[in-house]
Length: 418
Ligand SMILES: *Cc1c(COP(=O)(O)O)cnc(C)c1O
Image (cartoon, rainbow, N blue to C red):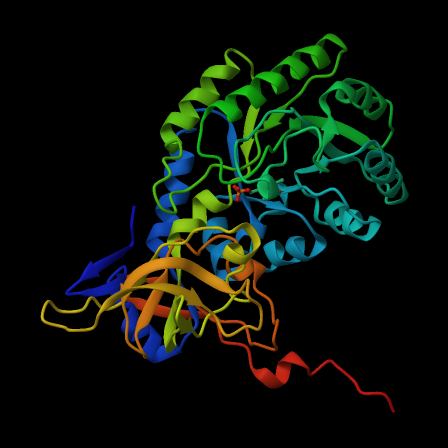
């Protein structure tokens, strides 16, 4: 569903003009649609109705309390990667019994917090981590529920920085080592084996890598059974891609049917960790053109959002569609030119889009589309820029879910030497 559509020549979020939102809350500003978030979650879950499943939203894709709270109310669980994300989920009303904890570098303090909260499962990524978790749990007189994150060694056919299921990635344990580590785990007094986990990458737009990975995981599940280890759930990770320009990621329904079919008669619960697929297309970054600058080689549109607000273009050379908030009328004489859309940050890598054909004037508003995932969550204060405001539209009402940061706060914790 697209919740950002033109209406009377103005781009809207649901039924609110983005120009109104810019007027009220300023720019740069992230704008989310509650309807789009809700629909994405419900569509993803719909494919698994009638089978035991748990959809754990990957918090790192967008950790806004308002978004976590919305998903919690819809029944979601959460995939966390730090103690900070655990605290956020709990603050947002998330159910600890629906939390899976991923990540290669969990500290003892993070393990304690998660054991205290009583999370659903630790996705353990190394033999050393398993040993540490067993020790931490023993000290607390608890038993830690675990899955081992296995590396199925399938090519997710995505950008190398967001591909995680190959042998040379830092994630998970090698497929060949998994059985022996499970046997070690089975012998540990404060570890309870619950599942098998894998996550092969992000922005995956084909079905086959998911199915290949699940095949490998199922082989392992069967091998474990032969060694007397019963697996209660399979965590298939996240990674379903979204459409940024012309990609055609698998539809949720097709994905769900194919994954369920693979399971056959096995009585295991399916766990998923989608991030981008639930939030990516439910948010835009609203920005204003500050200056137009025409050089011999290029036309630049310098906007008030930058790489610190949306890092994906600079980090992965990622493409985001960029739309004018107000469509120019037919008799308007503003020329359409090919623009570099860039921010004010002092880095040549600070761009939001290359070679965009737009008819622009200074003061125009632009919407950077599909910015709901890995946008605000990766934002920084580079160049001492306050992070953007965040607004959620809910049926005609705009809620400021995070005010724009105040400059004085950015260095309030800092001290000069006496
Ligand atoms: C990032 C991540 C996800 C979410 O990935 P998406 O591509 O946003 O769906 C899920 N699980 C793990 C372990 C991750 O690191």
